[in-house]
Amino acid sequence: MQFYNQVEDTYDTYESLFIESQEPFVNTAYKEIIEMDGVPLSKLVLGKPATVADASNTGYTAPATLGKICLEAKEKLGYVLPGFFIW
Image (cartoon, rainbow, N blue to C red; front, top):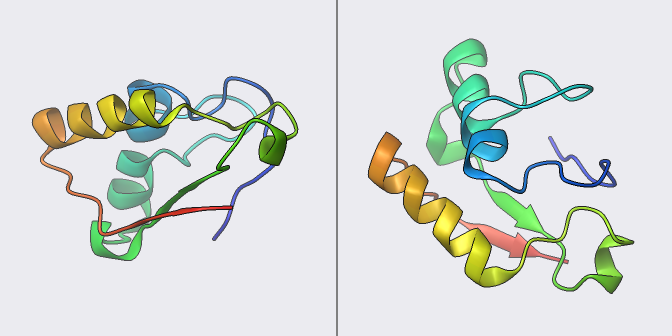
Protein backbone atom coordinates (compact mmCIF):
# COMPACT_ATOMS: atom_id res chain seq x y z
CA MET A 1 0.00 0.00 0.00
CA GLN A 2 1.36 3.41 -0.85
CA PHE A 3 0.02 6.85 -0.03
CA TYR A 4 1.35 9.89 -1.83
CA ASN A 5 0.31 13.38 -2.85
CA GLN A 6 -1.68 13.88 0.34
CA VAL A 7 -2.72 17.30 1.44
CA GLU A 8 -0.21 19.47 3.26
CA ASP A 9 0.55 18.60 6.91
CA THR A 10 -0.40 14.94 6.55
CA TYR A 11 1.81 12.37 8.31
CA ASP A 12 4.25 15.00 9.55
CA THR A 13 3.84 14.56 13.31
CA TYR A 14 4.25 11.64 15.69
CA GLU A 15 0.49 11.62 16.28
CA SER A 16 -0.57 11.68 12.62
CA LEU A 17 2.07 9.21 11.41
CA PHE A 18 2.00 6.70 14.25
CA ILE A 19 -1.13 7.14 16.41
CA GLU A 20 -4.21 8.46 14.60
CA SER A 21 -4.48 9.75 11.06
CA GLN A 22 -6.85 12.55 10.13
CA GLU A 23 -9.50 13.11 7.48
CA PRO A 24 -9.62 12.24 4.68
CA PHE A 25 -7.07 9.43 5.29
CA VAL A 26 -8.54 7.83 8.42
CA ASN A 27 -7.17 4.58 9.82
CA THR A 28 -3.83 4.90 8.02
CA ALA A 29 -1.47 5.71 10.90
CA TYR A 30 0.93 2.92 11.88
CA LYS A 31 -0.88 2.00 15.10
CA GLU A 32 -4.23 1.93 13.28
CA ILE A 33 -2.91 -0.31 10.50
CA ILE A 34 -1.28 -2.66 13.00
CA GLU A 35 -4.18 -2.87 15.46
CA MET A 36 -7.19 -2.58 13.16
CA ASP A 37 -5.93 -4.45 10.12
CA GLY A 38 -3.54 -6.90 11.77
CA VAL A 39 -0.60 -5.95 9.57
CA PRO A 40 2.64 -6.60 11.47
CA LEU A 41 5.11 -3.75 11.91
CA SER A 42 7.70 -5.83 10.08
CA LYS A 43 5.64 -5.44 6.89
CA LEU A 44 5.39 -1.63 7.02
CA VAL A 45 8.04 0.55 5.39
CA LEU A 46 8.06 4.32 5.69
CA GLY A 47 8.69 6.37 2.55
CA LYS A 48 9.03 10.13 2.22
CA PRO A 49 9.97 12.57 -0.55
CA ALA A 50 13.71 13.29 -0.53
CA THR A 51 13.29 17.03 -1.11
CA VAL A 52 10.54 19.64 -1.06
CA ALA A 53 10.65 19.66 -4.87
CA ASP A 54 9.99 15.92 -4.94
CA ALA A 55 6.90 16.42 -2.82
CA SER A 56 5.19 19.14 -4.82
CA ASN A 57 5.11 21.05 -1.51
CA THR A 58 3.20 18.28 0.32
CA GLY A 59 4.44 15.25 2.18
CA TYR A 60 8.01 16.39 2.76
CA THR A 61 9.36 16.11 6.30
CA ALA A 62 12.88 17.30 7.04
CA PRO A 63 15.17 14.36 7.93
CA ALA A 64 15.91 15.69 11.43
CA THR A 65 12.20 16.07 12.15
CA LEU A 66 11.40 12.62 10.77
CA GLY A 67 14.19 11.16 12.90
CA LYS A 68 12.69 12.73 16.03
CA ILE A 69 9.23 11.43 15.12
CA CYS A 70 10.55 7.89 14.63
CA LEU A 71 12.57 8.04 17.84
CA GLU A 72 9.40 9.06 19.70
CA ALA A 73 7.59 6.05 18.18
CA LYS A 74 10.41 3.79 19.37
CA GLU A 75 10.37 5.26 22.87
CA LYS A 76 6.60 5.38 23.35
CA LEU A 77 5.36 2.43 21.29
CA GLY A 78 8.42 0.22 20.97
CA TYR A 79 8.27 0.55 17.19
CA VAL A 80 11.54 -0.07 15.38
CA LEU A 81 10.79 0.46 11.73
CA PRO A 82 12.09 -2.24 9.41
CA GLY A 83 13.00 0.23 6.68
CA PHE A 84 12.74 3.60 5.00
CA PHE A 85 12.77 4.77 1.43
CA ILE A 86 12.85 8.12 -0.32
CA TRP A 87 11.88 9.23 -3.78
